Image (cartoon, rainbow, N blue to C red; front, side, top):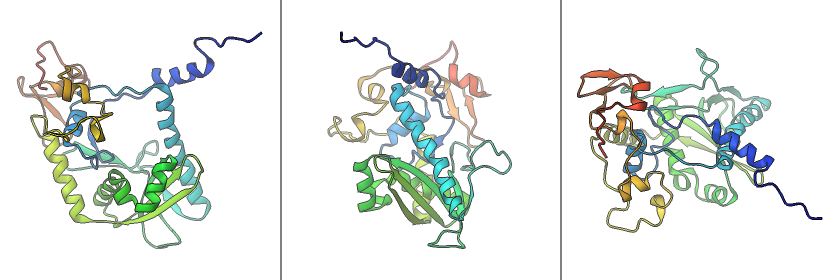
Length: 281
């Protein structure tokens, strides 16, 4: 007799666990890992917490696979004699974190390392990624700058903030476990442009122009964008001080204020908003 599988299986329960215990999606800052994306409007919506990303448990588990690969690569490098620091010496439980002077543009390094065969005496920013076979082939063929500009931009900001002049990029193919590596040189002009872009987005009071303004929005970055319903269909944003007309980022310390009450807001207050909320978007 053929057994009919239950409607909710053990595997489903595993995926559900990832959904139930995922990290809070509200990032306090605009991330260096995001600044290389092509659409200013998407980044503005993200910084303003306009919509909650919706990922099924399987995808959340896939994201965690990338996180697990970081510690494996750190171990691999140490095993061959590379000196690696992947934690803040003043707070060993967390990664090394940097931010722009305004405190709103920030990121956390995967690590820094020295002792590579290619340049034994040079300290490098370390960036670890995973990829499927198709994207991995593109990265190998074109290099990270052309194939993954967001990864290239991320490393440029980390080099700017850390003062280092080199980065070492490692990408692991999730299908074959092949490792691609590439040394990346600091490009100060690129870092200047990225910083200017971040500040323009952070302090913009209204959404920037759409990436596909006047063109097709059924492909490219618009197609699967988290903020598509807000951007294109007029869906109301998630209620918070950041999507309110009275909420505004302060120029330092990563702080926000309520311009109506003329006071600084706690992170908890930013999350919930108040009864006098007025949507900005």
